[in-house]
Image: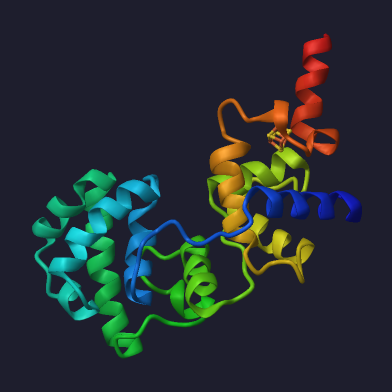
Length: 214
Ligand code: SF4
């Protein structure tokens, strides 16, 4: 993507989403970490329905570390993959206590040593809690970036590193804006191409038009 189109993309995101914030509800770094782990293959809305119940019962890493696995499973069941997620959040709580004095680490290297925490989860925490200029690539950002031709990369972690280089200097809220763009505008099924202002340089749209003409 050339410099001019990159700017058009950034400007369009600003128009569509002038003020953005994380759609997961949380009040501490630890709560955000747990919420992000729960959000794997689940909507933020559903996670937000479950976390108040979960955090009412378990407030600290210590509470989770001592939690009964079956009880945690029952509470988080509506999130899907609940058996796996329950194990992960109990284990990562123990690791936070043992390795990091009960505090959520503030760097990528340490965060990704925790159970269930990959680059995406770690970067959501780094961006939202510590204000780091990183782009956590989820399914929406991966799709949008490839459709528009910003990258040609199917691996989310590699895509994240490439996007951070491409948008260096413009990263502040970019992660949130790109997620919203993918979630509500450039949707997986039936993207809003008709009204999209990025049509003239979107690779995916050009391909659609070409197929229609054949
Ligand atoms: S033209 Fe369509 S596919 Fe391309 S960015 Fe816009 S909504 Fe997405």
